[in-house]
Image (tube, rainbow over all chains, first blue to last red; front, side, top):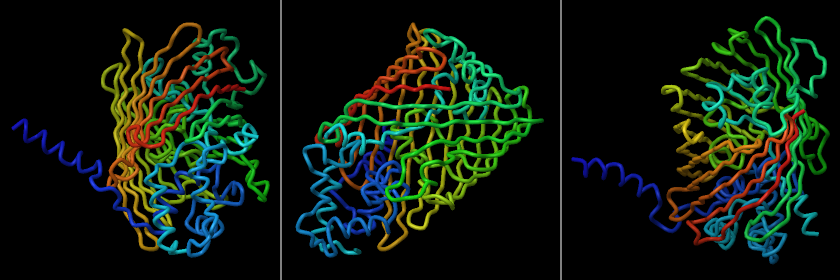
Length: 119
Length: 367
């Protein structure tokens, strides 16, 4: 009985830890609202209230505008500044306060490779 | 150049002076034991001022501006903070930045009060002055028992909806990702009931219609905490926020335990977050955030914190997690001056990804 109770607890917990590499759809909405907003769009950084460097990532419209500059409509910007700053080695690296997860960067790259739909 | 970039870019760690729930069960049973606001933070009352004197290395006069003459119906406060150090975000950078410059006033008469916190925040690039000089909080409050600091409190105005542990450091995962990011104050109507054995806070809020809000949804928040004996408490929390782009639901539990023998305060919080993108193709993600903090006062005004945090960004994605170990050494030099040495080691995907952290020295001057 105790084993069964433990299993009831453990199975949902393990399921909650994720089992596949990345199920997230590589869409503008996920890139903007799930990745860039919490990482880059904090109030003191690239938010609508500070608009640092002319970028605001805290809303979908703000991200769309910024991403058009950074990756180009259709993801055609040859100097992909977004990936460049996310992976830079020196003081250009962003986000400034904490690293972005490589799986998030990979999803952004997949979205760009797909033609950056939604821009 | 690196230093200048640090100044320009690392304001993400800017903050606000907030309550120290570490003191709640070890020094007094409720937030209102030390603070004017029913959920803590901001202006200290007489007991809070006395506590600030008692815990400091060289206490001194803890009153506003060292005892500046003021009418008895007016409480004043203010905070200035800045920090400097190193941040590892995948690359090492020097950081130096102001964090906070605010003044606060609370005018009270016959159980009614008007509360205002105003100050400076980072200017908008090419923006207007309204984004530099602003008021983070302003509300009217009615208090049932002003003499006892317990009972009903009703507030209407701009404030942070009361929810979960209100730790001072907003970089704590349950703050940053758990529904209480920096400057997420809203316009709200809030009812609180506080007594030594239980406290309940319920708020209905709307996003700030004037500025560019951090909290971009309208919704409600609830926090209820029950004391278990003299030295323990458990709480439940919930918040729902409905925005034009994202709906978020937060649910969690808190626990507080004071160990009188070693004089250690333990605080814990765990949250389940459901994020639903409601524009475009949409998407729904489940997130987890948790934090455990152990806090011990030392001699000479020192207090040592050790914290462990976990954040699962999306439960569908294996390894999309970050865990951290925090160490904070607070030095309450006087009743007005606090030095804080804070460090974090942050592991992404349990250390298999790019890792981060920081080591910062922070100075906090309470007016």
